[in-house]
Image 1: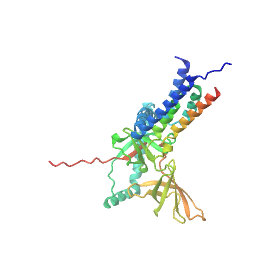
Image 2: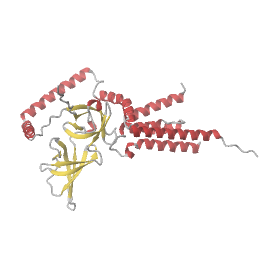
Image 3: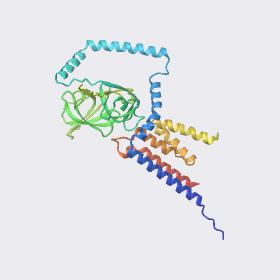
Image 4: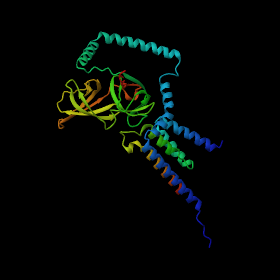
Length: 268
Length: 88
């Protein structure tokens, strides 16, 4: 009787492949444990030129000069109109009084801001975060707060040398202390993603759609606007849904608090 | 150049571009198809790890969120390799 001998080569290949895969995984795990920014930095340096190219294309670098000039003139006219309206309205007077009061209370904001381009944003980026084109080389750290159109929208979660990841406050599960409406009803805002929040306020609170939501710090301005208030007589709390006044999905520029470089006074 | 090598390189370029721009819903079907067609296709695992490195890893995210795509690509690779071995 003839018996077919098992082919030893295939099992050896499988063993070698499995050993190689396990070795690679262990090596990668070791590198991640000892230098957690190595792989993110490496892949980000490969991807950043592609993100910047897309940003340039979205900014209109492929449009004709005449189109860009026309858009520039139109934007200048709109800006001039808005400035005229702003100067003639009572808003500027109220803002000036607000700034004077803050200065008297010693809370005037003199923090310069750092401008950053948004390289990637939701929905193309998961986990409700932004990728911006400034990093530790520009003084950005994981304590930097991020603003869009004057609204506080998030904080830096991870800073590499030339880029940084911004975690939006509206990320699902994040919570933040806010004050809602003209009565400054305190509440905890829970992120729902995409710039949307929910908060529970006591039943009977004077919170209505359109009310302004501010963060609990005095200097940071508007945090959002109330979209709707759901009232249930059987529930001791009303559900407030509010959104940030900026569209996260269309963000192209953000600002960060510029770090203050401390200089030592040397005695001579 | 061998046609299959050219096809594999083209697929890898597409996979890389979709991964860089976060279009995982385009990258995943391409990776799965290439995993079935080509032998010893490790690019899907690399793409999953790259996706996590670009958008996932970092403090604040749980370990499951930070390495989700890496785990999914490893699982898919093991699953499809096993399926190919059983069927062929």
